[in-house]
Amino acid sequence: MTDTEVKLENCRKAVEDRIPFRPRVAIVLGSGLGDFVEEIDQKAVIEYRDIPGFPVSTVAGHEGRFVFGYAGETPLVIMQGRVHLYEGYSPEEVVLPVRLMRQMGADILVLTNAAGGLREEYRPGDLMLITDQISTFVPSPLRGANPASLGTRFPDMSAAYDEELSMLIRESAAECGFTLREGVYLQNPGPQYETPAEVRMFRELGGCAVGMSTAVETIAAVHCGFRVCGISCITNAAAGLSHKKLSHEEVAAAADEAAPQFRKLLLEAVRKM
Ligand code: HPA
Image (cartoon, rainbow, N blue to C red; front, side, top):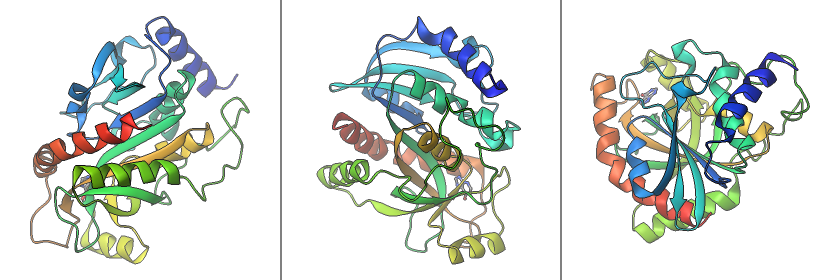
């Protein structure tokens, strides 16, 4: 067994007796969006720190637990808090939780994040359906040995974000009566925010939103057989597109403000999954 397989197996063993049911949908909640767990009928909680070898966030305001529960009839496992490459975790460590949720039985993954808007028309508080991604600026979580138990050596990324799940999110936004943006998410390693020159480059490359998570998780999720969809909460105009200085506080405050809409959209969409 490879290191990755051993770590994953240890985590699986640590949680297997504490999982109340087989989840169908897995959700990763991004910065400031963790309150979504209040929307669901909660059945069990597992703290990350109680799972040996599980990566634990070092960022203020990031919780660290799995929450199990139901949205309507849909059995869910939710990650309230994730880790990022900029914390020093390797790409393999960053995606371990995604692989673990697949082993718990989930086959749909909903990834969410806070992101900077790269398009001029985006406003703080906008929600963006992720239709595709650019991960070229971050290392792949699939580097190194590829045990067949995890997935194929060369996964196809031509339809990484599932069209059927994306339609459910579009329909749910229409039902909730608000506009949903759509676009390409670009992952930058961080933790520093971008320079205006980087933002100009990312715009040229076709990025619509930039953030410090998600794309590596999508790669691992496609690799291990999840159907994936994603929503970005636009918390700010990316550097150089507005005169405002960027700060984590501003990003967190904007995520808080958008949270009610985000919660409503996610709940509606997940109930249909
Ligand atoms: N850049 C990168 N990550 C982010 C941003 C940003 O502007 N806003 C929220 N997360």
